Length: 276
Ligand code: PGA
Image (cartoon, rainbow, N blue to C red; front, side, top):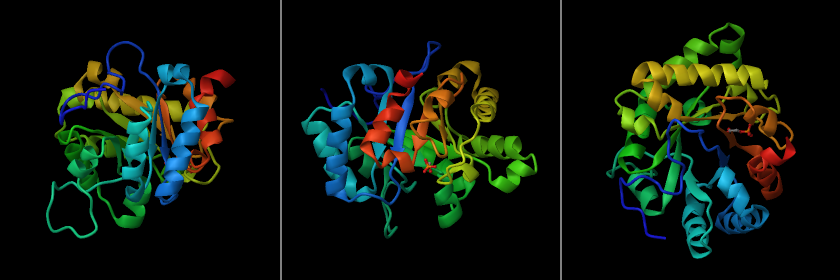
């Protein structure tokens, strides 16, 4: 396969348009798996998935930074149609930022997707809406696709602030992005109370917020780009609940944490359509 040049659209990821959006199932490994475990996982996952699975679903894995190079080599050498993702990056191109990794460094490793604004980054590492916006724009500028993560806390949900909080996060994260860039974007709706807790949102509730996200994007950029945006649900997605969530019209994929660490479980989530 010809190498993609910087800024060129990703041929392996589905293109937005008025036709049905191709689902994207992403495994966010968080701070799990060293580089050897990453290689073993990818090989196992690739055996579990068929060409038909890849036809129906885009699949990405997001190892920690230390696993990216090994993952890239195995994906490239074995020509595996699994997309490589990262969990975070800095918004600057280079400079005196000890401990940080730039978007262009990730792009050079054939990383296609970068999660920005995960709630753990926001809550544990103090990332602000402005940081998330700068990261999203930097990822786009480096020719990759951001997965912009948004979601409300339990307190916000209980006090009926879900819609205003999520709409504000989306508006802040996408400020200054062009409508052309928006059409290829991924947004992950991850209610914080559902992350790692086993408490999954009901498909109906998740759909309602994902619809709101699409409407918010539509208000900012117009209906057509909004229809192209893929919206993932994240928060305790498991093989048993994936197909019900994916049946909702505005849920176009899943950002999976815990269940993405086991290749069999993750493959079953990718193959959600077979358990319907
Ligand atoms: P979980 O994590 O699937 O373990 O709930 C999801 C996430 O944080 O992306």
